[in-house]
Length: 400
Image (cartoon, rainbow, N blue to C red):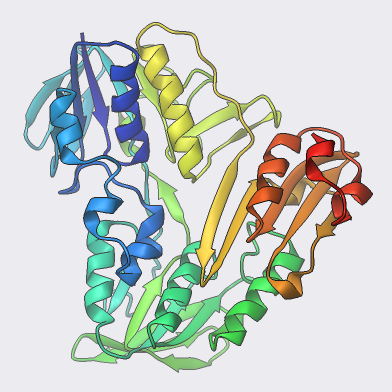
């Protein structure tokens, strides 16, 4: 049997390894359109951008792993179409046959469509090549404007400030991190960045870019204000790569629609990672998640089921973000809550927030509090005493 994996990110790399771990001895081929073997994206906006990690540490596994496991990795190859009837893929490097297919096509950066958006010096951050270009541009002091106050934008802001650049963040919502966290956590991170010298502007959209000699020099906003810029980094969300699946007639709706087994509407085609819209029985809803744990766990389930297993995927989502010397770890969705309790003082930059709904823990945010985060992952979905969690004298182990 031949298994083909389209994509070369976290989900693809993990799926290939898991298929071998399941005992499969047939052909495995990974096809990626980038010139790199499967790699991790989280370090790109943090350690790799800052130069703390080389490319070898960004790769999910060393190149030797794929050779040792007899896994073929075809880089720089684009899959153009799927012929489901004949079980073949048309690629820029010829036709490839499959018996089981995994779509791990991931996502791409959402583009900002305003006048001047094609000027040099305007970057998106999604790939290794993107970050290489930004790093080269940051070799001398720059006025940096970051469009988008989400996690990627703020991580880039932290790196740029730490390496001596002047940074402005422009966010169209009325607060940074508005889509992903509570007003209180947004305020905490606003104060953190402002205290480091970042100029944060909220409630305005970027309306245009301008420059001379084809290079960006100015960013103008919807309220008429403008900012000088030598470099612009845009982080306004991502779009799932569903076109390949859609054109093949697979069901898509804010992602490639899969069941709890990671199976698409075609029984021989599975999907995993950012590109999927999947059911979560624990949360009683469908989700499309942009997270490493989701990609890893879902791809393991897909690997088992492609080989005839019957595993299901359902877990509480968790994420993390590194900004300056703070690690934020999150589990669940704080937007589901009707009550929040703090454990520790945000002023110390070491605290946790537990979120409740109907007496059950539904989410938690932990800043430099790994112990509280580990407890939160075990408590989420369960009833707990808010007062006990808030009391720093409470031994957390007694609550499990």
